[in-house]
Image 1 (tube, rainbow, N blue to C red):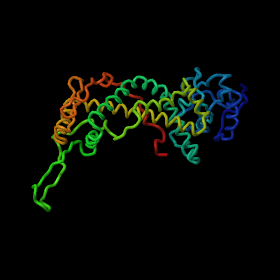
Image 2: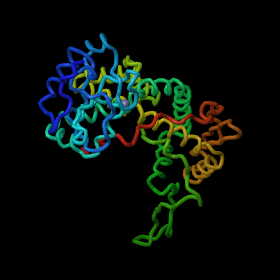
Image 3: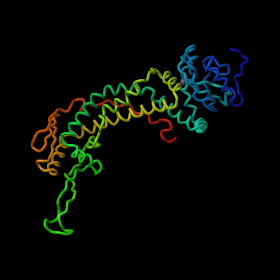
Image 4: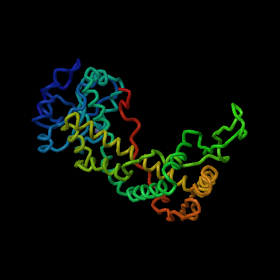
Length: 357
Ligand SMILES: [Zn+2]
């Protein structure tokens, strides 16, 4: 490299932007750009000249990844980075995206970006996918393991809904809005007398403890199974081909806005649906506790009479449902539903711009 090349700039060298971009698009990696300094940038006085530049595929294929002067000066590692200028050293630095975020304390880029709403939205989505680039694979693997339990969840819920009848399930589920207590209707007043003192029907709280785990019975009509719903969402993630963070970044750069937004939605949806299924399994475990089922059976007897009542019991994992005095169904709780589940992938809560944009 020529010694005559200018590498010190007293004022922010805005005018070098296009030259730099041109270089990484066609000629070579950032560090071979003549006006770039290879040392670590100083901590103070940093200004961002270019944020999120991306080295072209053409250059990457020829020269490989770029080394980051901060964290990996000898080992090439990045495709996306930031061009920085320091008012202290007067020099220009191209740092990897790995380290660049440390320099963004002053909001300067946020301000520049917010001038363009669409660009800003895109940047938030890009940041989201970058932060969760392992999620498509992680979620698919997690779902493979979870699927048998969710399949059994669907089966047990269907058995309970049919066995206890949908209307009764609805009454039980209603307790989630009413402080958890089951209710029965009782006649008060005197038979035969007219007027305001006559026979009235009032709702009364049944028992002394609330019913538990009733959320799992939500929705009079669940429609599509939990398994099918999650499989649909996860299928959308199965097209992801990137294996490394760099490949993910290149993929992100190539996408039109809508495809990028869809990918972010798929990731969020899959995380949300999986979390919901895990919540359902936990609720079912609580719901199936023997004392809870005894409470429900006693309530049904009081509310519906011996003939119309339903009952459900759990003896050591063997579930028996009765309608009146007749046995309706007997099954064993699948072991998939009693095992401890590994924690599901959770979104990073430092997600940029989370809803505040
Ligand atoms: Zn770095």
